Image (cartoon, rainbow, N blue to C red; front, side, top):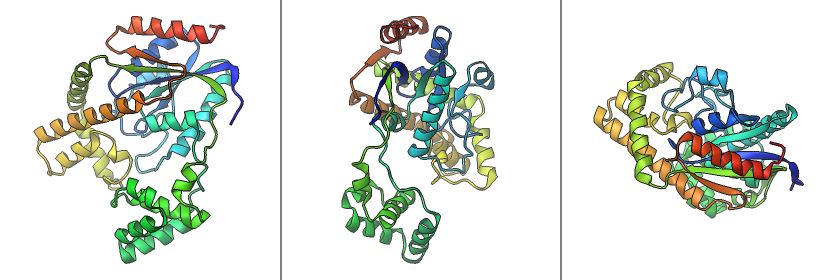
Length: 319
């Protein structure tokens, strides 16, 4: 574990989807020397702007967000990729004399940064090709059964149709001789900085659900259907890819393909987003409590900003 440098702090701004994290982050930047790092597994993808609620080009020009638009939707991006990139961005921000403000709702990314990521063996193309050949010959259920014998704990947490995770679990065992469960018990790098954490969340979940519904309807109004049509027309994407599993995209894809009605697409998209928010809130209720502060997202931006600023100043006297 790294020794903590008390002269350096990093700010985490977490919360469920549609809670107003981006607006608060932009407001904070007007008062303290922070630079924003996006902690969002969907905002990393180019060509996915409307359905991810990505800040507009104008906002991104005036308030740059690091780790936005860094991958094509056809590419895979792991938690390990994020941790490596985020640590590099944080180091660069400190070198420029500023503080990193990490903003988003991808809780697994935050958890990996805060607690460290298991030092899993790196991906190996030859091994993955071998696993794919076995799956083509004998079926993915064969791979699943093999993992159930080798690593029953991992098998219980992996859906039999989640081919990517099945492949990775077997790959790890073939490369290292140890199971995925074994490696997950080992902790990797943690951050060598003092972390001040904020959760922007509603005191009344009904208000958040209302915001989610309004936002999804705005997506529709602003051209979400056309955005997904263009992604489909590329021909190299499918619903098994992480990018297309982003909330809302799967439902719009199904509608465009004629599998569900327009009304069902809207209802299912809103429902899926609510489920995501509920899942994020569940994570946050179990979150590490040290230097963790809850901010009601029903407050005005000015009030929320003042609350955050006062807390940060108590931790960082140079501001």
